[in-house]
Amino acid sequence: MSTSRERGSTANDSSSTDVEVNQAQLPQISEKQIQSPPDGGLTSWLAVLGGACIYFSTLGYANSFGVFQQYYETHQLAGDTPDNIAWIGSLANFLQFGFGAFTGALFDRLGPWIIYPAAVVHVFTFMMISLCKTYWQFMLAQGVLLGITQGAMVVPATAAVSQHFAKKRGLAMGLTVAGSSVGGIVLPISLSKMLNGSTLGFGWSVRVIGFILVVPMGIACLTVRSHQVSQKLPFHPREVIKNKSYLILTGSLFIVLLGMYTPLYYLPSYAVAHGMDPTLSSYLLAVFNAASTIGRIIPGIAADKIGHFNVYASAGVATGIVTLCWSKATSSAGIIVCTAFIGFTSGTILSAVASTFPLCLKDPRQTGIYMGIGLAFASLASLIGPPISGVLLREYGGFGPLTYFSGVACLVGGVVGALCKLTFPQGLLGKL
Image: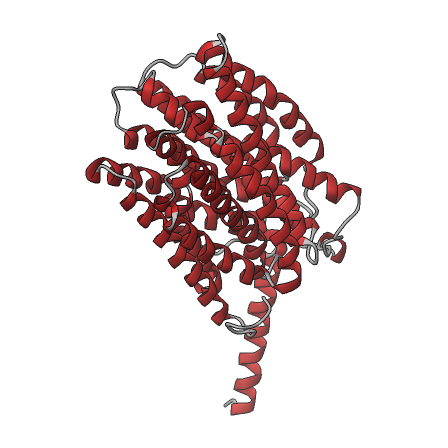
């Protein structure tokens, strides 16, 4: 007959055995395989350069969709409603993050190789867009295929840069995401000039954009490298559900993205409706992205000093407030100034949240899959947000309700992001 001490010893032995079994199921790795971020060095900064090139070619295009929106409304898709046309860009935005749940896991297991074929197909897709004539053709090429190729590059590039930096993560992510702002300056100006100020026509204008992207895509393939050892890691969905800070941050980003993309889609149309020349209106996206370049880099540096969560939440609230003032700008000068303010504040959001997600994780080797899942869920908002704004525009016949919806969404999302800090020991007012 065993005593309670013997039974306890047996239970402990059994528990110890279970732990040993569970540990045996994990990948056997050496300490050298889990390395702390170097926070600098040639390889790390080259990864930032490659990531910026990917953002230039992907989100830089997404930030230029307003030019396509305004052009389609008066040319190939003149018979379609604004919200129907917006679905093309919204689907691409959704897939570029939604597909990241899959590509993020591939990045964690296999490294950045997935970027190489995606870069080739990405350029090829622009050649296909140049041949499109009907709505369903644009949807398949510019919505589905382009969105998938973007998704195969954005999350792996973001995760790769995140692995290289800790203390300087805000600066690194700011510089990386700033590539989308530079793309948002170069691409809409180039496209607008070719569409409205030359005899190239739509087909060759889009092809030229594709040829331009060959250079940054090539640089990205040569420079983006992961810092952690790529391997198959155990992933338990239950751990995601238990991670309160991760879930609240993802929910916050979902709400923010409901409204964040609306100005990018409708600012040119809004300006034309208020008497601005169509060519000048297309330059609004360049103004927007020029301001967002500053909004990604300077707050990124500040985030390393005052906290990534603090900068992200503040950016959401500020974007909401400025967007609520959008419909009050009716002169060309006022619209340009308002565009610059929205660009600056919203530019901070993506770079800040990219450096905030790793704070919610325990294992840096799983950055890709966790960031991919979070962005995939949040990107559902970018799928439905602009079309909802289009419906508001069509039903109410004015831009007021559209700007109110966009502003309130960003404002509420920023507040939820701030409340997420309550799940950390630092609390609501702490540096985090």
